[in-house]
Amino acid sequence: MSTISIELSVVVPVYNEEKNIEMLFNRIKENIPVSDWELIFVNDGSADNTLPLVIGLSHQYKQVKYIDFSRNFGHQHAISAGIENATGEYIIVMDGDGQDPPELIPELLEKAKSGFEVVYAKRKKRQGEGFLKKFTAKAFYRILRNITSIEIPVDTGDFRIIHRKIQAILKQMPEQHKYIRGQISWIGFNQTFIEYDRAERIHGTTKFTYKKMIQFALDGISSFSTWPLKIATLMGFGVSFICFIVILYTVYQKLFGFTVTGWTSMQISILFLGGIQLIGIGILGEYLGRVNENVKNRPHYIIKDSNIESLK
View 1 (tube, rainbow, N blue to C red):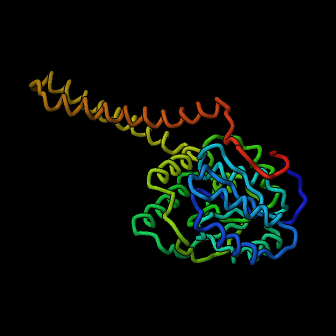
View 2 (cartoon, rainbow, N blue to C red):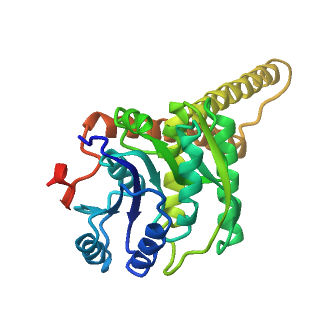
């Protein structure tokens, strides 16, 4: 368990970022406004030269710490590992691709010290991203805000600074499918933001594919909203009402009109009802699957190696 011994910790999850490591480290080091600080790189199963570069930096600078996972456990778990093992009174989380500018570190820390337990960085512009990614990201954040009972800020990522109070509470939130920015919003306390223009990646291509984006969206929605379950219920009531009207019409035709057995109408009814049922079952399955993962109570990540004393 970490103890508070320094003023600032910076947590950087990395996955195949060998071309960005040294440049990012230099930018962070140049923008640290305090003397007692640490930088924790969390290697999320990189297959390139990321880990040797990080270890090399740790040999040159005592402030550099690293956590090496046994395999790729995912971006959110990498962030969790860094936060849980940070020893600073304030903790900054930022990505390892250079899009989260280290030049904002002094402003984030100053804002936090003015009386805020959370200060998140809100994007004004997103450079180097296609229309489809910008559109889907914008739509997701706004949909999530409208279907959850908590105020999750739009146009934000995980780039933020948190006080150790937030760290302590995050350690008590053991869900398997992590959605850190949602958890931090749920915790509350005094929260504010600063705005910035998000730059392009320094090198390489994004590791956040559309498949991962969809999974991330599902984790966010299922963790903080029962809206899909409510939709399935409303659809069930709607279909039941339609079926009731059809039954009344069928009885009327039987008593006062005529009936013709129709293959088309039967097929449409079967497919319609079957589709609604499968949608409902699928939504229930998503929630039950997450319950199943949490019941197993497996560790969120496995650490293969680290130079942090408490993890050796």
